[in-house]
Image (cartoon, rainbow, N blue to C red):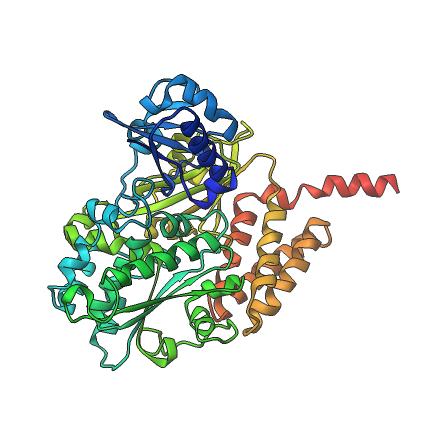
Length: 521
């Protein structure tokens, strides 16, 4: 029997993957070909979706992007035997975009059936948890600390320190909370992992629970990810039935239950304490700190909070050892990160690379430049609160500390590319407007400062006392940075001031336009 792989990833579904799968099944039936269709996750080459793969004696052969109308022609060309076709790319593993990556966290994504325990185990799944079940909690924490794993979100806080804090606190009830509220622009790694390799996240969270003595966990998924919610819930149930979750995990006497909670569209719930409020059934508003969640978190109990990419890195760390993971990366930024290339880009997708790769390499070597063919003018890295980098800074290595020196942040690894037609004054305005819309409203610098920020930038664009308002904007940004309760208001000045400093001409070019308009009057 020939196996054909058609992704069930949301990106593939959005461009007709279900229709392609149905067409392949129909064509095979008509041709009396015995095939098995596996709905796998995405390989991350989103510019080739739907990417159809056929299992051959030489390996999996890729074709894409495939539309339902291409299927008959593919059959005629002999694609079930891996024959050449205009949509063919040869062996998937040899496609340059894919071959040049270092896949640790995404090692199985796009390869296995996401809801097959057998597939997961065949490809190394649960090796890390099996090992963890025979270790002391302190030993697991030490392995994670040795790996150098840091939070794959904003500040890059060391995961081992967070886990040790929860491990060392005495408490009858502890929790593991996974932040899957992936709301940053240009990011989709969490969604891809949950849809394409859900057991990896389950395994990582369970290892965390065993390490610190937690018995319950919650995955907080944004409501805009219905496919991820469905797959995670199915995977959790399968894991329960096969005793990888529940009261007695694989006869170890360890217990861990896992639940999915859906967000309600609030960007602020990506902030960890606001997320806890939402899980508890309250309005998503930021909490004062201290106490930190590791001491007093969900329902007032010690809680580990990590995002999907942090927790999904844990299984391979336990399976192969902290030193193995630490050998990837540069400086204090160890391991790999799933970089997501989006925006005005020719070849958008996910690239997992060790820290140290540059923005230029990601845009040019993987992204292939802009979709419009025009020069790249700016790249925003780290979501809507990240800095806009000009080409002069494209060679700064992806490293938490090096990016901080460049007044930028790596964040969740999302890159949004802009060509030379972008108006950076308008992008600065967007950052302030985004903050005004998404603020939880608890603190004045964020709630009021963002609204004043929009007004000040509007005056700058209109050439209304421009120099005075540029000074006022900088003062306002300092107040927001120093006085905001959380990163929502505290980081909004980063994209604003990076636009002002790196692209000053866009905050002055309206002068000529205003002169022309005044002359016309």
